[in-house]
Length: 150
Image 1 (tube, rainbow, N blue to C red):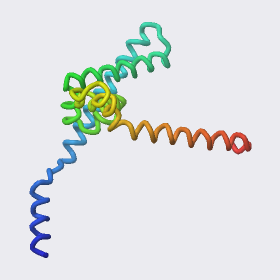
Image 2 (image 1 turned 90 degrees about the horizontal axis):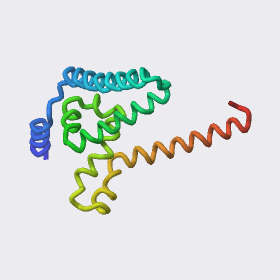
Image 3 (image 1 turned 90 degrees about the vertical axis):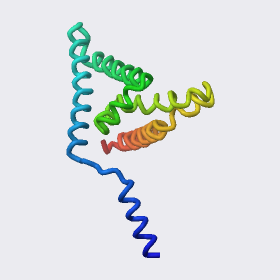
Image 4 (image 1 turned 60 degrees about the vertical axis):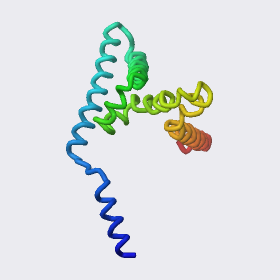
């Protein structure tokens, strides 16, 4: 029994990739920073056209989502994600990628059973629990306001 445990531990150690934390942190910082810089440039350019800040921010969000979707479809965003890790996954572009990637992967299975069924396999739980927690917090805020607590 002890021999099997040691052999298994040796096997796990052999196949487990080594994480180089500092280079990964630097890459995530750079990629996330580049995405945010692109977003800020978009917002500034749109505001220079005379658009209010809130509207410019909304347009910037749409532009970043569209860019992420297009880059995912062209198989470029997965390469950015592989390089930048969390720096590419955390922004809204990463969420758009998580919705589109399964659709691209399963498109060969057809519109309904491929794209329709698989599109939310990664992002579905995020959407579900985001909506559920928003609803619960909304009910709590409503009750607190009704009793004059807030």
